[in-house]
Length: 119
Image (cartoon, rainbow, N blue to C red; front, side, top):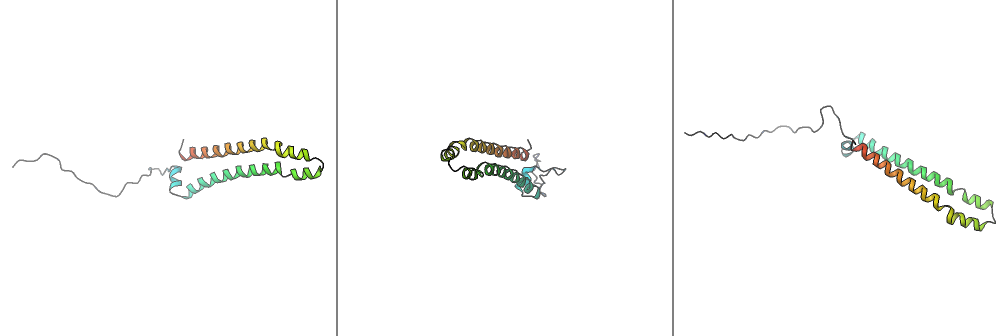
């Protein structure tokens, strides 16, 4: 009888391996994807920082525009000044405030992405 020297394939089955590292390190992105308490904390911190920036802009806007009706009421004969302030004087501060807010929000998001992706 001739003997066949080819090896036979064997299938090994067992419990699936865990993908976690041995010392329990989790990437923040994994925490967010799995919606753990730590991932929730990461997302809430981003939301808190964005809210702080928005409230800062809102407060500055209120301080900039809020006193104008009182100022105009204190000087009743200055209709031309009112239209000049409303028409031209507020645009530059509003544009600068909007630019600051957009840059701040993008920087916050960029920092969050760096944190999540471990860069």
